[in-house]
Amino acid sequence: MISRARRISIPVAGALVAFGVVGASTSASATDPQDVTAKAAVTTADAATAFWTPERLRAAKDRTEDLGNSVKGSGKPSAAEPDGKAGVVPPIGGEAKVTTKSKQVNLPNTVGRVFFTLPGKNPFDPKSWKYCSGTSLQGKYRNVVATAGHCVYDPDSNRFYDNWIFIPSYWDGNQAWEGKTPYGIYPAKWYQAHDDFVVKEDYDYDYAFVNVSSGFKVTWDKGKFTKTPVGRLGDNVGGQGFTWNRSTKVTVFSFGYPAGPHPDGDRPFTGRTMKWCYGKTAPMPAAAKYNLQEHIGLKCGMTAGASGGPLLLNYKSKSRTGLLNGVNSVAWDTDGNDRYDRLSSPYFNSETYDVYKVAANRWTQ
Image 1: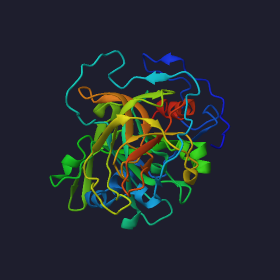
Image 2: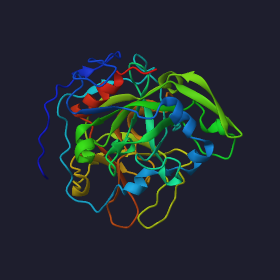
Image 3: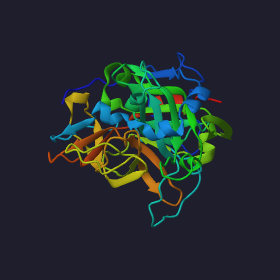
């Protein structure tokens, strides 16, 4: 494995029993950690909300299939490991609460689809309408969405996406439009990503944290829309907790909206509804194609479209909450049978917390 120089970062010791992350700021500034790229969304909240008509939402294709984020084969496991003490930020509503177990796997309200258009392209061209998965996350102002870096920043054009919105609990059924956005639409205001993904396209840092505006319920009638404010994301659906520097071998749930094909061309998923996997993570092999050296993965057959969805540690079905321990990033065909059998995430360490911390303290309207 190619050795890599680590930045020195000071971990937060122990669990945070109340939410109040230090170093708060409302704009990109010198106080932000040097390994964080913070960028304001170019599209206004009103314009992004108005752009996504029901027809465009239904026509959007998953971005990860275009990028081809997959690895075939296997090898010696990488050396992903903690770079400091483990830390925990509890989920919204779980700051001082013990939740009983549930026998059912209830899908989290926090998980949904993110939609965006390709930068530098004609936004009205259907080829520009793309989506990934994401999840609402704990934050001081209850306005944070976690997703993959490639679901925020375009590796092809080296620019952040346009018209970026988040729809929690999205489902693309055949019922009325209102049912597809049960908690509203939340447009992006700020993006936070790691410098090494933005500059080097290093998939060990393929994660991002987006600050969204307060949401809107939208009604379309004869091509015109009306929007009704619904308040903050975290107040409406809650937010998952966050954890870093944990063991590389933990049991997690992975959620997302897969739609892409397996290498053999079979498409078992449509992206219309949320899917999940459950299993124990382990370090994945290095993959030079993505400068990937520190990923953890679990057995999972989800395909492209699930990218950006959460890996949740200590997930409890009754509360539908857990701790974000990773995001879906790369699909693997480890046995070479042209079927994906693993899904991997960057290992969350102190540098991940640095990026999250900026978003967790950023206020938006």
